[in-house]
Image (cartoon, rainbow, N blue to C red; front, side):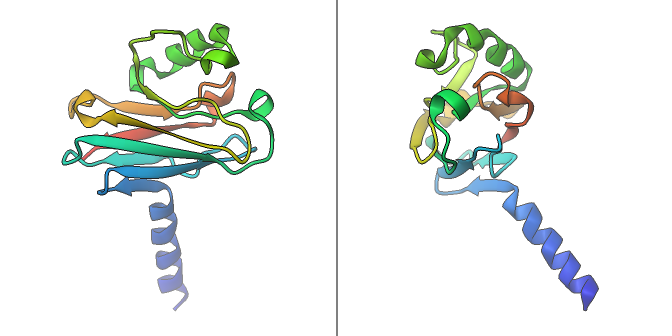
Length: 149
């Protein structure tokens, strides 16, 4: 009986870490502990467009603990975050016109929500992708994978 409960708990934990959406949108929550509630977003190839709904369920303001959701190729993630620091909060810590950014929300503070919709055609099955928060220092803890399925 204990074994069955352990397996069930592990299975539920795995599904909690995966945000999958056949309806072409997903909600990702962020908090004051520099965390997203998922490490994986799966996007169906059948979607024309995909929407990320980002909620900041914390209480701290954007200038102290702001979060966004940025999508790039995996190899570009850390460079985009680093290059964006000098852009400042007013530019969501993203360099203006950075073509490495596939999609990005604005920076939000506690209690706020935002979203971004992008064409799935911008993604390729042969590339790997990361999502992350571009607020300075957050990429170390707030980073995950995006998979096209």
